[in-house]
Every structure is written in C-alpha cells, then in structure tokens.
Amino acid sequence: MNVIEDWSAELKREAESTRSLLGRIPEDKFSWRPHPKSMSLGQLALHAAGVPGGLALLLNEAVSEVPVVPLPEPATRQELLEALEWSVSLAESKLREWGEDGIRDTWKLVSKGETVLEAPRIDMVRTLMFNHVYHHRGQLTVYLRLLGIPVPGMYGPSADEQ
Image (cartoon, rainbow, N blue to C red; front, top):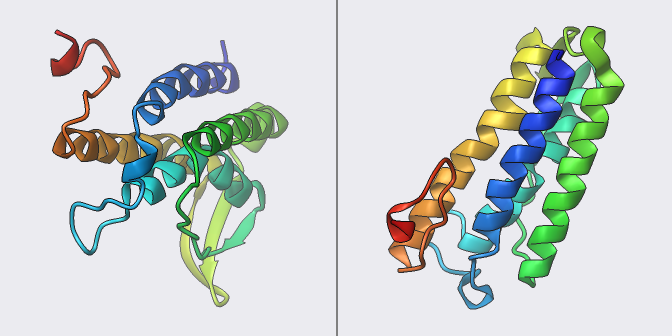
C-alpha cells in the first residue's frame, strides 16, 4: 500500500471511533463546559467532527491564510454525525486528489502575507488532519467522564466497558 491508501484506511477506521464517541454526547449537554475558557461540549464535538474536512480544504491550496475557526454548537446529535460523514468524505477525496506526489508538495500558512509555517503537506496532514482529531477526541472523553457519561473504547475497551 502507499501513503494515500494507508491514510484513507486510517481515516475511515478512526472515524468509527469518533462516531462512537459522538453518539454518546447528550443533546441537553451541548452547552456544558468544564471551564469558562473551554469550548462547550457541543462546540468541541462539532469541531472534532469537522477537522478532517476543514483541514483538507485548508491544506488544499499551496498557500493558505490563517483561518478564523468558527465554533458553533450543533442543534442535534444527528448534525454532529452528518458533519463527521461530510468531513471524512471530503478528507478522503482530497487525499486521493493530491496523490502520492501532491501529498509531498510544500504547503505554507501565512498571516497577512507573512509566513507562519512552511512544511511538506504530508507533515501537515499527519499533524493537523489526523493528530488534531485525536487530541480533540481525547478532550471529549474527559468531558464525558466529568459528566458521568460512559466513555466508549477507542483502542480497546474503556474503563466503562471492562
């Protein structure tokens, strides 16, 4: 297999874990936050669902302006799950579009014309499109634990599934 095939498989496999986690989030807790500086549960969940696709769009251009990331709350759990489906589909589509050559192109993030970051797209896909989701998914498990909601296993059973 090549990088594109490996990462497409990882994207789909990890989306299953994310879907399982999003499915546990109660709609009546979307506005709950563990700290005033924290995103609400709904904001964090919708952000995590949209990261792969949103970052695929950002990484699609050779040069991208630092984005303003909106953090709306979803209205329903279904909205979260639909956002995840759209996001994963778009990310996989972009991976395939870039191919083995395009994934290695240089990508640049700029702010008002000044370079903030410049790296091969392949590095940013791993860091931003993949690892970023795992980071937010971990945050979501802590939010659920604080709310007393059973946490699904991601890489084997959780303490709630023993």
